[in-house]
Amino acid sequence: MSRRLLWLPNLLAAAPPDVHSACMRVLGIDCGGEFTGYGVVEQDDRGELRHICCGAIHLNPKNPLPDRLQQIFTELRDVIAAHTPDCCAIEDVFYAVNAKSALKLGQVRGVAMLSAASCGLEIAEYAPLSIKSAVVGYGKADKGQVQQMVTRLLRLPQAPHPQDASDALAIAICHLHTAATLTRHAMSSGR
Image 1 (cartoon, rainbow, N blue to C red):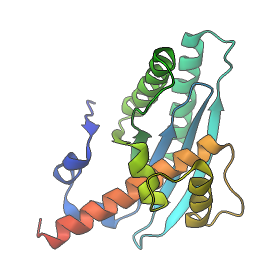
Image 2: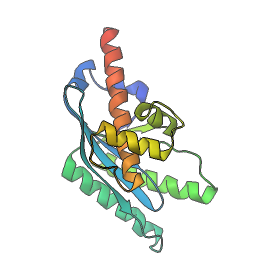
Image 3: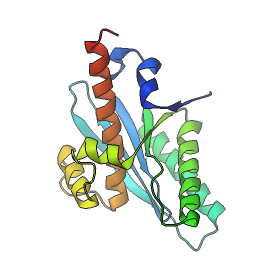
Image 4: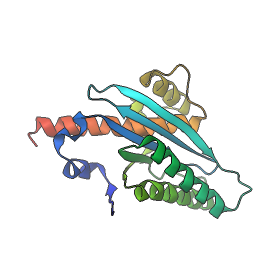
């Protein structure tokens, strides 16, 4: 089954306006060279957020890169199979320290996107500024502020660890908030 990359302007065209009035479950992925965080968040028909799972795939830097990429692919597919998200949200490319780091991050992102696409999930990408704005209300919030707000929004007894898991949950929450806003906009404009 062929899936296309889901961009924000295409969200309304891809689904009727009432598609998000039902429960929606999103897999958020925060890619990294050593840890790739994942988090699944569900929003019910009343708009309440619920934490389903989160964690991080720890990559041993001593392992060859193909083995690390295979680990990401396999473990993300396992998360998808276990928690059946409706779609996937991933952080867009951001500034990297050097070209080598950017290339490795790009490879991890590509494999993460392939994992989701191979399971039939549509993928939305969000800039770090958009994620922080959607979750904290301030695009330049630090990681601690994001982690604190994720803990509060999901009513968790303690902050998710590692930080990559918290970031992945923030990406999923960003997608749910964006989808809800677009749905409200579409309904108010009569689409």
